[in-house]
Image (cartoon, rainbow, N blue to C red; front, top):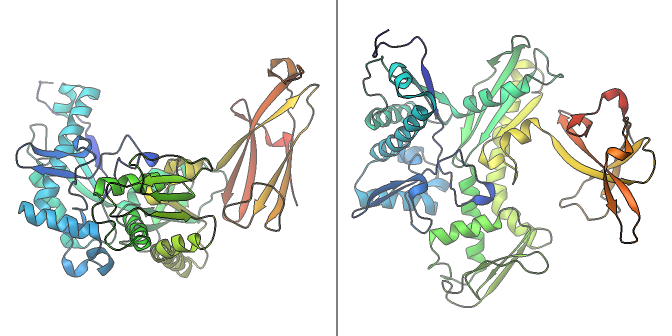
Length: 475
């Protein structure tokens, strides 16, 4: 084999080109993602991704600018982010294809450098490339053509001595399905004929696709009904929430707040049940009762305090009024897809799988939500031989749940009894303030839901306790 002779293998490079991912939302960060943003500076040149300082107003949403104006919903075209993106684009006198091509060139060069460090320069030079780029389900043929033009202009399709670089587009929910189906195939309760709906709820678009399982071994699926989608991703939730905050303040109070401070505000809000906007100092603080505070004294025109507490009325209804229109659109898309599946197969889809940034729970990655269930760790203090271990699981019909297990909304769901041959002396010890020594038993209980089926498993020392040693008694 000569130095330039191509090898039989090829390298597949996948690019999930999102609309909005932002590293400033560090409460839900992902180091494997690059921010979809550009900054044009006449003196310093152009920056992209992580190289853009947080305080700069970067160009975002440029992926959505590929759409013709007639195909952009009014709620999107009137959003501040979309109008700002178009304003920056006009100021730079560039078209969306040119901007996307520049971004793709930057991320492509970064990817090639990373691949070369992994496989070596020689193998990289000999291996043809197969490039796969994700596109929203709802995009038209002209959008795909414009994205192809951007990919070509970026240089990723340039001629190479080892062979032609092949480009393929794949729908975003199809890519999400490929990423989750492998885990789904390991579940013991799935069977041929089962149908699933994949909902990829991202920053800009929400895309859906459905599959039916043809066989388990090998695991084969086929598309069930036509995919669906809409422009109702997480950025529109952010937009509605910011509009709510602005309505709570006096007129024009928000005018001097920068986009960087808006991002910081949204980041501080994520995962908090109570939020205060306090015009006192600039640093965010934590109050003694757990409330989150955002201080914008130097930006707001006058001193004022706004309290939002989603755990009580009327603030909870305020939050719901902001989020409900967007969430209702997502719910409608899911319902429409599941109804289409049921109409074709004459039975309901067994699985609805949520992926994408908008579907994430704070602190969890998407695959944790799909395949790992919900797990909680417990401990018992023991002073003598360990026999059967008992735990009680409760359900609650309200959110957030009360701190105690009493109340009309709380009911006992089941009791879990399990046994294991445990050597008391092998456990770590705990000494109470009176000097009494106990042995500490640590274990975990995991709950998984499939359709209407709820299942519990017990884990001890990172190993699953055998089903014959676990007794779950539902009330």
